[in-house]
Image (cartoon, rainbow, N blue to C red; front, side, top):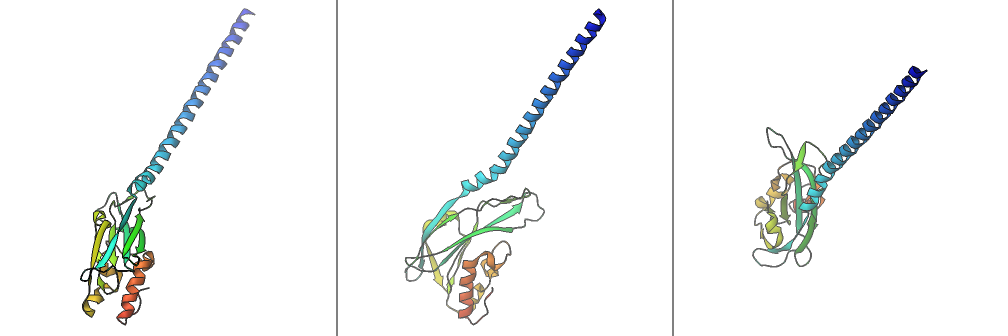
Length: 204
């Protein structure tokens, strides 16, 4: 009888130890899952926070270089590109764009930010490519963010047909990548106006 009681107690002790082990394992597994989820969320929100940190306002005025008069309807185009983290040949891919037009006083204001790049293999270049263009005028290209914050930008009037023909397609604006005209509707419309003035077909 005594041996039977000892066996029962041993069995209860083993059951208790097994129960404690399962509880500890379950708690550890739950903590691991919670830690993994927290890490994944941190990684997911990092590009969002970084992207928002880049957001800024471009503003200024565009005038005729010769007369100094404000130019209305000048297109301000800001284009963001992304590149691979690892690459043999630096390849630019279109990411996003923002556009606006100058008002009657030649002034413009535009909130710019690239938006999130969800690809784990690429990242958005910190500085975008900027184009300032009006039909019959030579565009300003590759402007720095400093030039786009409160500056007076001066456009030179193109004198000949040959000069104007340089800017009847997106290729004339020296973008780092090719993309459809639909990606830049404002700039495309201005290019089409210039094309029509020269008796050419619209690009899109």
